[in-house]
Image 1 (cartoon, one colour):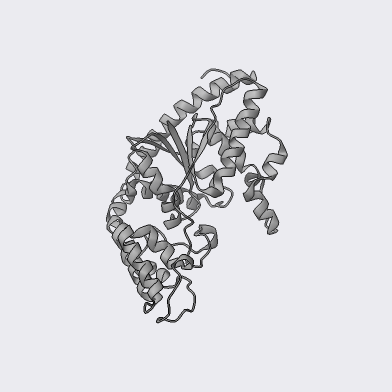
Image 2 (image 1 turned 30 degrees about the horizontal axis):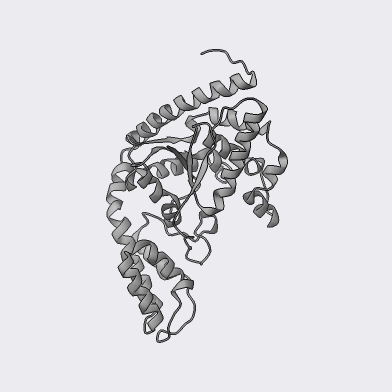
Length: 323
């Protein structure tokens, strides 16, 4: 089985990225043939500063390597190192109706809020479909909010196969087991909301953020509902099951303040990520090694993409000069 997933280089990675995608990516590299890419083409819809784009792209690579991604087991690369993906996105656009793109949640959400929408955002599903199809991906790990994009990719593969001839395999979503990761304000943790807890942030800054997590005004001595508490939701992700059960009992029994839970959350965060700060610093001090990893991954990914695009062009009747 070939697994594919990407993560945007549009900001500093955080707990939502880790539990929503990265943790699963690291685990899957030991079970399947995995292709993971840094989606810097996609990030252009929000990041339009060249130096910042370069830095964020490098930072995503460093974070993955720090967390244990093995470039000998997974193909790890930059999206922009495979330019064929943008060619395929164009070809898919010629067999895809505008109505399908108008139904995309990301497009509808922005237009409903009256926010400006670029053609890049409108065509986002086309590029995402190209990312998936060009590597003949079988499985695409996603959160529930991304399932629609996989269904649209399935539709586009069908449109092409019916218009020309069968070239693309049908990808299937693999739902992440992780629940919604709340930010410090209670909304979904997201760079766009500014409510994140970064993976390798300064301890003092991280503790300050954790202590500011939004909670209700239930007095210390009264029972509290763990099911509606943002702090407890994060504790469940970082603590072992026995400790989670203990905290749930303490919540329901009363006599516990949210400050205690926040302090334990910070300790759990440090246990998981604090010890990796030195590892990350080591990768950050070797930018040439990071670049070598990405270039090698790009070569492996592009070899697959070129084979698929040769079939696509032939199916369409496109003729290109040989190199």
